[in-house]
Amino acid sequence: QQALPNVVILATGGTIAGAGASAVNSATYAAAKVGVEKLIAGLPELSKVANVRGEQVFQVASESLTNDNLLTLAKRVSALSKQSDVDGIVITHGTDTLEETAYFLTLTVHTNKPIVVVGSMRPGTALSADGALNLYNAVNVAGSKDAMGKGVLVTMNDNIDTGRDVSKNVNIKTSAFSSQWGPLGMIVEGRNYWFRAPVKRHTMNSEFDIDSITTLPPVEIAMGYEGVSSVAIDAIAKSGAKALIHGGTGNGSVADRIVPNLQKARSDGVIVIRSARVPDGFVIRNAEQPDDKYDWVVAHDLRPQKARILAMVALTKTNNTKELQRIFWEY
Ligand SMILES: NC(=O)CC[C@H](N)C(=O)O
Image (tube, rainbow, N blue to C red; front, side, top):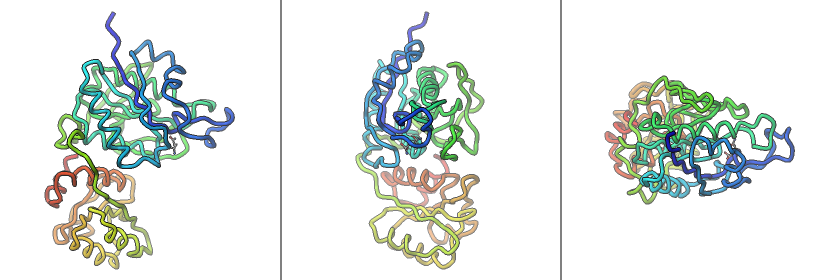
Protein backbone atom coordinates (compact mmCIF):
# COMPACT_ATOMS: atom_id res chain seq x y z
CA GLN A 1 0.00 0.00 0.00
CA GLN A 2 1.48 3.32 -1.10
CA ALA A 3 1.66 6.24 1.33
CA LEU A 4 -1.00 8.88 0.73
CA PRO A 5 0.16 12.19 -0.76
CA ASN A 6 0.22 15.32 1.42
CA VAL A 7 -2.08 18.00 0.10
CA VAL A 8 -2.56 21.47 1.59
CA ILE A 9 -5.85 23.29 0.98
CA LEU A 10 -5.51 27.09 0.97
CA ALA A 11 -9.00 28.51 1.43
CA THR A 12 -9.86 31.99 0.17
CA GLY A 13 -13.68 32.06 0.30
CA GLY A 14 -16.20 32.06 -2.54
CA THR A 15 -19.35 30.01 -3.02
CA ILE A 16 -17.52 26.78 -2.22
CA ALA A 17 -17.49 28.26 1.30
CA GLY A 18 -20.97 29.74 0.91
CA ALA A 19 -24.15 29.15 2.89
CA GLY A 20 -27.79 29.77 2.00
CA ALA A 21 -30.92 30.02 4.15
CA SER A 22 -32.44 26.86 2.67
CA ALA A 23 -31.65 23.95 0.37
CA VAL A 24 -33.49 25.60 -2.53
CA ASN A 25 -31.25 28.68 -2.40
CA SER A 26 -28.85 27.91 -5.25
CA ALA A 27 -28.35 31.54 -6.28
CA THR A 28 -29.34 33.60 -3.21
CA TYR A 29 -26.83 32.95 -0.44
CA ALA A 30 -23.78 34.44 1.25
CA ALA A 31 -20.36 33.52 -0.15
CA ALA A 32 -17.28 33.05 2.06
CA LYS A 33 -18.94 31.86 5.29
CA VAL A 34 -17.63 28.33 5.97
CA GLY A 35 -14.11 27.87 7.31
CA VAL A 36 -11.60 25.46 5.79
CA GLU A 37 -11.70 23.04 8.75
CA LYS A 38 -15.44 22.65 8.29
CA LEU A 39 -15.02 22.16 4.53
CA ILE A 40 -12.53 19.36 5.14
CA ALA A 41 -14.59 17.78 7.94
CA GLY A 42 -17.63 17.78 5.66
CA LEU A 43 -15.83 15.62 3.10
CA PRO A 44 -14.51 12.50 4.90
CA GLU A 45 -13.76 10.88 1.51
CA LEU A 46 -10.71 13.15 1.27
CA SER A 47 -8.89 11.21 3.99
CA LYS A 48 -8.90 8.10 1.78
CA VAL A 49 -7.00 9.82 -1.05
CA ALA A 50 -4.64 12.25 0.71
CA ASN A 51 -3.37 13.55 4.02
CA VAL A 52 -5.14 16.87 3.90
CA ARG A 53 -4.59 19.95 6.00
CA GLY A 54 -6.10 23.40 5.56
CA GLU A 55 -5.09 27.03 5.92
CA GLN A 56 -7.54 29.91 5.83
CA VAL A 57 -5.72 32.55 3.76
CA PHE A 58 -8.69 34.85 3.17
CA GLN A 59 -12.47 34.58 3.57
CA VAL A 60 -13.84 36.77 0.76
CA ALA A 61 -15.94 36.75 -2.38
CA SER A 62 -13.42 36.71 -5.20
CA GLU A 63 -14.64 39.87 -6.94
CA SER A 64 -13.20 41.77 -3.96
CA LEU A 65 -9.69 40.28 -4.10
CA THR A 66 -6.86 42.80 -4.60
CA ASN A 67 -3.40 42.74 -6.15
CA ASP A 68 -1.96 42.52 -2.64
CA ASN A 69 -4.13 39.45 -1.98
CA LEU A 70 -2.76 37.87 -5.16
CA LEU A 71 0.81 38.45 -4.00
CA THR A 72 0.10 37.06 -0.52
CA LEU A 73 -1.54 33.94 -1.92
CA ALA A 74 1.10 33.26 -4.57
CA LYS A 75 3.94 33.70 -2.06
CA ARG A 76 2.26 31.20 0.27
CA VAL A 77 1.78 28.71 -2.60
CA SER A 78 5.42 29.13 -3.57
CA ALA A 79 6.67 28.59 0.00
CA LEU A 80 4.54 25.47 0.45
CA SER A 81 5.62 24.07 -2.92
CA LYS A 82 9.25 24.12 -1.69
CA GLN A 83 8.42 21.98 1.36
CA SER A 84 9.34 18.31 1.07
CA ASP A 85 6.26 17.35 3.11
CA VAL A 86 3.89 18.95 0.56
CA ASP A 87 3.03 17.02 -2.63
CA GLY A 88 0.30 19.25 -3.99
CA ILE A 89 -1.69 22.39 -3.23
CA VAL A 90 -5.38 23.15 -3.65
CA ILE A 91 -6.76 26.68 -3.55
CA THR A 92 -10.48 27.04 -2.90
CA HIS A 93 -11.64 30.26 -4.52
CA GLY A 94 -14.70 32.22 -5.57
CA THR A 95 -15.45 31.54 -9.21
CA ASP A 96 -15.81 35.15 -10.38
CA THR A 97 -12.08 35.85 -10.59
CA LEU A 98 -10.79 32.30 -10.24
CA GLU A 99 -9.43 32.42 -13.79
CA GLU A 100 -7.30 35.45 -12.94
CA THR A 101 -5.75 33.95 -9.80
CA ALA A 102 -5.13 30.65 -11.62
CA TYR A 103 -3.33 32.47 -14.45
CA PHE A 104 -1.31 34.57 -12.01
CA LEU A 105 -0.10 31.41 -10.23
CA THR A 106 0.62 29.81 -13.63
CA LEU A 107 2.96 32.69 -14.47
CA THR A 108 4.72 33.16 -11.15
CA VAL A 109 5.05 29.99 -9.04
CA HIS A 110 8.13 27.89 -9.82
CA THR A 111 7.18 24.32 -9.10
CA ASN A 112 6.48 20.98 -10.76
CA LYS A 113 4.03 20.04 -8.04
CA PRO A 114 0.35 20.15 -8.92
CA ILE A 115 -1.46 23.36 -8.00
CA VAL A 116 -5.22 23.14 -8.38
CA VAL A 117 -7.65 26.04 -8.09
CA VAL A 118 -11.27 25.10 -7.45
CA GLY A 119 -14.62 26.64 -6.61
CA SER A 120 -18.28 25.85 -6.91
CA MET A 121 -21.36 27.39 -8.43
CA ARG A 122 -23.74 26.38 -5.63
CA PRO A 123 -23.19 26.74 -1.89
CA GLY A 124 -22.77 23.55 0.13
CA THR A 125 -26.22 24.09 1.66
CA ALA A 126 -27.99 23.82 -1.74
CA LEU A 127 -29.57 20.82 -3.43
CA SER A 128 -27.10 19.26 -5.88
CA ALA A 129 -24.26 21.37 -4.49
CA ASP A 130 -21.22 20.96 -6.74
CA GLY A 131 -18.49 22.00 -4.30
CA ALA A 132 -17.91 18.63 -2.65
CA LEU A 133 -17.15 16.75 -5.86
CA ASN A 134 -15.15 19.66 -7.28
CA LEU A 135 -13.02 19.71 -4.11
CA TYR A 136 -12.66 15.92 -4.04
CA ASN A 137 -11.46 16.08 -7.65
CA ALA A 138 -9.06 18.93 -6.84
CA VAL A 139 -7.45 17.01 -3.97
CA ASN A 140 -7.16 13.91 -6.15
CA VAL A 141 -5.44 15.86 -8.94
CA ALA A 142 -3.20 17.75 -6.48
CA GLY A 143 -2.02 14.44 -5.05
CA SER A 144 -1.42 12.79 -8.45
CA LYS A 145 2.05 12.21 -9.87
CA ASP A 146 0.55 12.35 -13.37
CA ALA A 147 -0.55 15.96 -12.76
CA MET A 148 3.04 17.10 -12.10
CA GLY A 149 4.56 19.56 -14.56
CA LYS A 150 1.20 20.46 -16.12
CA GLY A 151 1.09 23.90 -14.55
CA VAL A 152 -1.80 25.30 -12.55
CA LEU A 153 -5.02 23.36 -13.08
CA VAL A 154 -8.72 24.01 -12.46
CA THR A 155 -11.14 21.18 -11.58
CA MET A 156 -14.72 22.28 -12.15
CA ASN A 157 -17.63 20.11 -13.28
CA ASP A 158 -15.46 16.96 -13.72
CA ASN A 159 -13.08 18.68 -16.16
CA ILE A 160 -9.38 19.44 -15.73
CA ASP A 161 -8.56 22.75 -17.42
CA THR A 162 -5.41 24.86 -17.51
CA GLY A 163 -5.38 27.95 -15.34
CA ARG A 164 -4.24 29.88 -18.40
CA ASP A 165 -7.01 28.96 -20.79
CA VAL A 166 -10.04 28.50 -18.58
CA SER A 167 -12.68 31.20 -18.05
CA LYS A 168 -16.03 31.49 -16.39
CA ASN A 169 -18.32 31.53 -19.42
CA VAL A 170 -21.69 30.92 -17.77
CA ASN A 171 -22.67 32.66 -14.57
CA ILE A 172 -25.45 30.50 -13.17
CA LYS A 173 -24.91 26.90 -14.30
CA THR A 174 -22.54 24.32 -12.84
CA SER A 175 -21.03 24.04 -16.34
CA ALA A 176 -19.64 27.55 -15.82
CA PHE A 177 -16.01 26.98 -16.75
CA SER A 178 -14.57 26.18 -20.16
CA SER A 179 -11.72 27.00 -22.46
CA GLN A 180 -11.84 27.57 -26.20
CA TRP A 181 -8.90 25.14 -26.57
CA GLY A 182 -10.65 22.42 -24.58
CA PRO A 183 -9.96 20.81 -21.21
CA LEU A 184 -6.79 18.76 -20.62
CA GLY A 185 -8.80 15.88 -19.27
CA MET A 186 -11.46 14.66 -16.87
CA ILE A 187 -11.67 13.10 -13.44
CA VAL A 188 -14.06 10.23 -12.88
CA GLU A 189 -14.33 8.48 -9.49
CA GLY A 190 -11.03 9.97 -8.38
CA ARG A 191 -9.09 8.86 -11.44
CA ASN A 192 -7.53 11.32 -13.91
CA TYR A 193 -7.98 10.82 -17.64
CA TRP A 194 -5.63 13.06 -19.67
CA PHE A 195 -6.09 13.95 -23.32
CA ARG A 196 -3.74 16.88 -23.95
CA ALA A 197 -1.02 19.01 -22.33
CA PRO A 198 -0.39 22.77 -22.29
CA VAL A 199 2.23 24.24 -24.64
CA LYS A 200 2.42 27.80 -23.30
CA ARG A 201 5.21 28.60 -20.81
CA HIS A 202 4.20 28.09 -17.19
CA THR A 203 5.45 27.48 -13.63
CA MET A 204 8.95 25.89 -13.81
CA ASN A 205 9.44 27.20 -17.33
CA SER A 206 8.37 30.78 -16.56
CA GLU A 207 10.86 33.66 -16.48
CA PHE A 208 8.80 35.24 -13.68
CA ASP A 209 9.10 34.25 -10.03
CA ILE A 210 6.77 35.32 -7.25
CA ASP A 211 9.65 35.11 -4.76
CA SER A 212 11.18 38.21 -6.38
CA ILE A 213 7.97 40.17 -7.05
CA THR A 214 7.08 42.63 -4.30
CA THR A 215 4.50 44.83 -5.98
CA LEU A 216 2.36 44.83 -9.12
CA PRO A 217 2.00 47.90 -11.34
CA PRO A 218 -1.49 49.32 -11.96
CA VAL A 219 -3.00 48.08 -15.24
CA GLU A 220 -6.52 49.11 -16.24
CA ILE A 221 -9.07 47.92 -18.81
CA ALA A 222 -11.24 49.98 -21.18
CA MET A 223 -14.00 48.31 -23.20
CA GLY A 224 -14.77 48.94 -26.84
CA TYR A 225 -18.41 49.23 -27.89
CA GLU A 226 -20.61 50.88 -30.48
CA GLY A 227 -20.77 54.57 -29.57
CA VAL A 228 -17.63 54.41 -27.39
CA SER A 229 -16.19 57.71 -26.18
CA SER A 230 -12.68 58.47 -24.95
CA VAL A 231 -13.80 59.06 -21.34
CA ALA A 232 -12.43 55.80 -19.92
CA ILE A 233 -9.21 55.85 -21.95
CA ASP A 234 -8.39 59.44 -21.02
CA ALA A 235 -9.10 58.79 -17.34
CA ILE A 236 -6.90 55.69 -17.34
CA ALA A 237 -4.09 57.46 -19.15
CA LYS A 238 -4.10 60.18 -16.49
CA SER A 239 -4.41 57.76 -13.55
CA GLY A 240 -0.81 56.61 -13.44
CA ALA A 241 -1.63 53.23 -14.97
CA LYS A 242 1.44 51.58 -16.54
CA ALA A 243 -0.63 49.79 -19.17
CA LEU A 244 -4.10 50.05 -20.66
CA ILE A 245 -5.85 46.94 -21.98
CA HIS A 246 -8.32 47.82 -24.73
CA GLY A 247 -11.05 45.16 -24.86
CA GLY A 248 -11.92 45.93 -28.45
CA THR A 249 -14.77 44.76 -30.62
CA GLY A 250 -14.31 41.88 -33.09
CA ASN A 251 -10.64 41.15 -33.75
CA GLY A 252 -9.67 43.87 -31.26
CA SER A 253 -10.89 46.66 -33.50
CA VAL A 254 -10.75 50.24 -32.20
CA ALA A 255 -13.19 53.07 -33.05
CA ASP A 256 -11.38 55.58 -35.25
CA ARG A 257 -12.39 58.50 -33.01
CA ILE A 258 -10.50 57.09 -29.99
CA VAL A 259 -7.34 56.02 -31.85
CA PRO A 260 -5.74 59.46 -31.24
CA ASN A 261 -6.47 59.12 -27.50
CA LEU A 262 -4.76 55.72 -27.39
CA GLN A 263 -1.82 57.15 -29.36
CA LYS A 264 -1.61 60.01 -26.87
CA ALA A 265 -1.65 57.54 -23.96
CA ARG A 266 1.20 55.61 -25.63
CA SER A 267 3.27 58.74 -26.25
CA ASP A 268 2.75 59.65 -22.58
CA GLY A 269 4.37 56.33 -21.66
CA VAL A 270 1.35 54.06 -21.12
CA ILE A 271 1.68 50.61 -22.73
CA VAL A 272 -1.36 50.02 -24.98
CA ILE A 273 -2.45 46.39 -25.30
CA ARG A 274 -5.07 45.46 -27.85
CA SER A 275 -7.34 42.65 -26.66
CA ALA A 276 -10.90 41.74 -27.66
CA ARG A 277 -14.25 41.59 -25.92
CA VAL A 278 -15.18 38.57 -28.06
CA PRO A 279 -14.63 35.58 -25.77
CA ASP A 280 -12.96 33.23 -28.26
CA GLY A 281 -10.53 33.53 -31.15
CA PHE A 282 -7.41 35.70 -30.98
CA VAL A 283 -6.16 39.12 -31.98
CA ILE A 284 -3.89 39.33 -35.03
CA ARG A 285 -1.01 41.80 -34.88
CA ASN A 286 -1.26 44.60 -37.47
CA ALA A 287 -4.74 43.51 -38.53
CA GLU A 288 -7.47 46.06 -37.65
CA GLN A 289 -4.80 48.50 -36.39
CA PRO A 290 -1.15 49.15 -37.38
CA ASP A 291 0.37 47.92 -34.11
CA ASP A 292 3.98 48.22 -35.36
CA LYS A 293 3.43 51.85 -36.35
CA TYR A 294 1.68 52.79 -33.10
CA ASP A 295 4.02 50.72 -30.91
CA TRP A 296 1.08 48.77 -29.45
CA VAL A 297 1.07 45.20 -28.16
CA VAL A 298 -1.57 42.59 -29.00
CA ALA A 299 -2.96 40.23 -26.37
CA HIS A 300 -2.91 37.04 -28.50
CA ASP A 301 -5.87 34.93 -27.26
CA LEU A 302 -6.03 36.46 -23.79
CA ARG A 303 -9.26 38.11 -22.77
CA PRO A 304 -8.93 41.57 -21.23
CA GLN A 305 -8.91 40.30 -17.63
CA LYS A 306 -6.26 37.67 -18.43
CA ALA A 307 -4.21 40.14 -20.48
CA ARG A 308 -4.21 42.44 -17.46
CA ILE A 309 -2.69 39.69 -15.29
CA LEU A 310 0.09 38.96 -17.81
CA ALA A 311 0.74 42.68 -18.32
CA MET A 312 1.17 43.28 -14.58
CA VAL A 313 3.57 40.36 -14.27
CA ALA A 314 5.53 41.22 -17.42
CA LEU A 315 5.85 44.88 -16.41
CA THR A 316 7.70 43.83 -13.25
CA LYS A 317 10.57 42.95 -15.65
CA THR A 318 10.32 45.16 -18.73
CA ASN A 319 8.42 47.98 -20.39
CA ASN A 320 10.00 47.36 -23.78
CA THR A 321 7.13 46.75 -26.20
CA LYS A 322 9.04 44.17 -28.30
CA GLU A 323 9.78 42.19 -25.17
CA LEU A 324 6.19 42.57 -23.98
CA GLN A 325 4.91 41.28 -27.34
CA ARG A 326 7.25 38.27 -27.12
CA ILE A 327 5.88 37.57 -23.65
CA PHE A 328 2.29 37.78 -24.92
CA TRP A 329 3.11 35.20 -27.64
CA GLU A 330 4.87 32.82 -25.24
CA TYR A 331 2.64 32.76 -22.13
N1 LIG B 1 -19.79 30.95 -7.58
C1 LIG B 1 -19.01 31.78 -6.92
O1 LIG B 1 -18.01 31.40 -6.33
C2 LIG B 1 -19.37 33.24 -6.96
C3 LIG B 1 -19.38 33.83 -5.56
C4 LIG B 1 -18.63 35.13 -5.45
N2 LIG B 1 -19.13 36.15 -6.32
C5 LIG B 1 -17.15 34.88 -5.64
O2 LIG B 1 -16.61 34.94 -6.71
O3 LIG B 1 -16.51 34.57 -4.65
